[in-house]
Image (tube, rainbow, N blue to C red; front, side, top):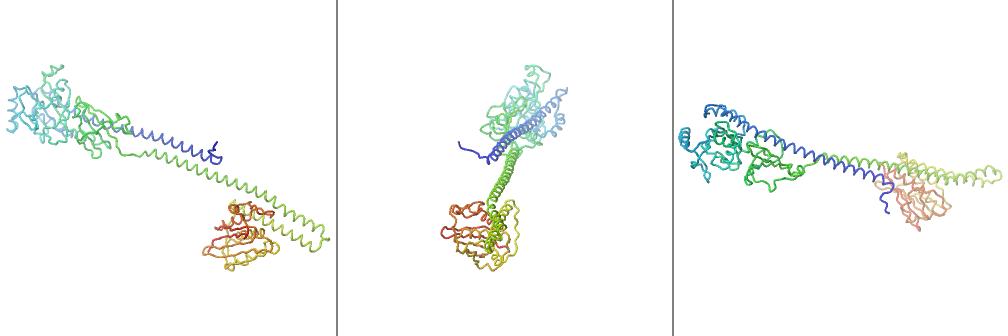
Length: 581
């Protein structure tokens, strides 16, 4: 079975999995909530737009009903001047109104009399009831049983062409006239082209309110008692733009008249950016599907106007929008996960360092107990021998015992120094304190501390040896004493050990070369690790700390060690230390 996680990576993997899982779950939840919030905002906005349009059309209906009350309340006929005075205030208060008009019902026998009145009123400019021919030109109306000509209209300017126009001559207007007459309620037309409006890209509509000579309850009575119609003339664009004038929004929409035939349903397209309603062809699909209205039907609202139903198709913006809360949740979740991982990594590194330091201490204590036992035994035995047999020992034997004690003491001192150096370095307590060092006397003193085998010889070479250097004397002492001691220890008798000091532009090179047993190639990568010794050392005593101490001191200098070795030509170890000005 493959092991997916080891014991060290398990906490990291666990935090990563949990962190990413919680982050993704929270991001998904916030994303869903934000989408629902945007859907709700979109619906509220479309509801506000729809309510504004419905409120405006209701106001226009109420206005027409209030004008109709004038006719119902007055016993005397309403003349032009009275009509004009009554509607003037409304025209100023309702900018969406194109015109307010009165159109009486004129039977065929009354036509001649009406046209005489019309001619007098226009000073001979118009003498007949009119209608549009197939080419769209105004012509005298054909003979019919009755007519509904526009008689009073305000404002007069720009609407004078509508005077005398027979509203019943147009099929669209006639349908609304008959519906209003039969129901007694306001009735709106489908989209029409106004007689007075030459713009081909503007649709308008009329709303008729029937006026009766006597109250009528049935359809037949209403037809018999019909006197005429109060009507309002409206451009669709004026109504929509006036309704939405005080609303801010970026939602485009189409308006369709659901009560009309399919080819005549489009009333206009509202561009939220320009805040204008224009006429243009509808989209191929009338139900928009987006994240704001996933069912499509959520984008559709309806309003009622004069017994007709207008459908408003809202078009959510196709511009991509950024879910800021979702993105923030994702980033915060990833940030928290990353912080936890960093904290865990540091904690694991500190724990690993503590374990390594603890292991090093155990190794040091174990090694110390083993390596110190031999020199202590030598010192103890030699001291006891001197104390017990001083009188019987010759001078040469006494000097030999003292020499053994001194050698063992130096070995113990060097071992203790190495242990202290590594321990302080691991604890971060080993300090770097450079000072000016005269290299020649410094190296000569080192030579005196090296225990050489019979016939071994130390030489000091190099052009830079006679100069001075700005280095840490204690650390440099630890580097060179260990390199020279190792060279002497692993070199045969009667061999030469060379210390060569050279200078480069930015560094000093301390090279220790010997003709010893060399270092096996497979051991070169580990030779600077504490307690590591090559397999070819045999019975030569040692703790494996010398090169580790030398590398630690070189690192503290900002330098490094290099090694070149061969079993037949010896070893060359070089300490490269930066020159400090």
